[in-house]
Amino acid sequence: MTAKTFEDLPGAGRVPRHVAIVMDGNGRWAQKRHLPRVAGHKQGVDALKRTVHACLRRRVQVLTVFAFSSENWNRPAEEVAGLMELLVLALSREVPELHKNGVQLHFPGDKTGLSARVVRGLESAAVKTVGNQALVLNVCFNYGGRWDMVQAARRLAEQGIEINEETLSAGMALAHVPDPDLLIRTGGESRLSNFLLWQSAYTELYFSDGLWPDFDEIELDKALTDFAGRERRFGQTSAQAPGSALPTSGRQHA
Ligand code: FPP
Image (cartoon, rainbow, N blue to C red; front, side, top):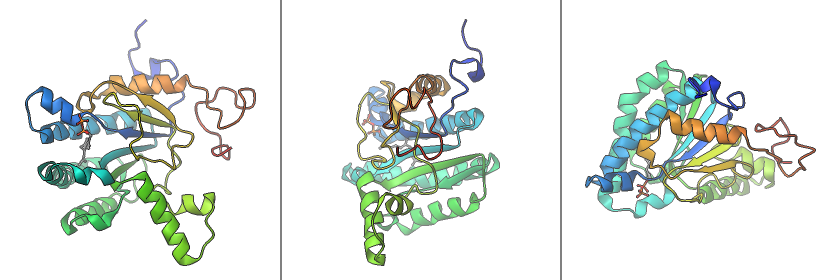
């Protein structure tokens, strides 16, 4: 029997609390159509909108996406400028609708490298949506996992605070959310590329060959169904951690 709605899918009861996504394949999507790479990123924004709505419907609590990495500055200047412009445009167009839907926006990443105009856009979107409860959307921008660990460690050192797992976690850019349960990467590559290095210690990884601009509810459901079938042991044995796809409190770092 084919599933008619998400609730009919096997494992629909075990929705991950936090889904993270490396949205890869925009450039190839555009190149296949003889379009500039930025056209692929524009379609990527639409795929992100679809995904946010799908996560809201599935009651995912946190969605974290990799929109611009610390390494993306090495791309052609035209593409970097296009991505900055797209961010500013997407914020002005989409924030009212996101706000109406109860989405709380955060922009983890290094703000020091960004223009004042971009920083203003990020800050005003974050302030406007601060009390929203339906979904936390982290758009990682000028973010890198190594940057995140270094900035957290540096602040602790400056304040003379002991560095341990707890203090470092508390200083990191995603300290406001639990660690991701599921990390999806589209585009056919099977690596993290400096995304959420610290936070993904016990995250389930899911790689798909589809290109990000083609990502939709069906692709998301494939990943969620796969996740629901995983046994997460968090360093324990199978007998100790009987088949749960979701962490119980306190077991996250066991
Ligand atoms: C990777 O694809 C994608 C990016 C570097 C940018 C991701 C951005 C979006 C999906 C748009 C949303 C962004 C904003 C500004 C809200 P790639 O270009 O590396 O693709 P390729 O591997 O096919 O070259």
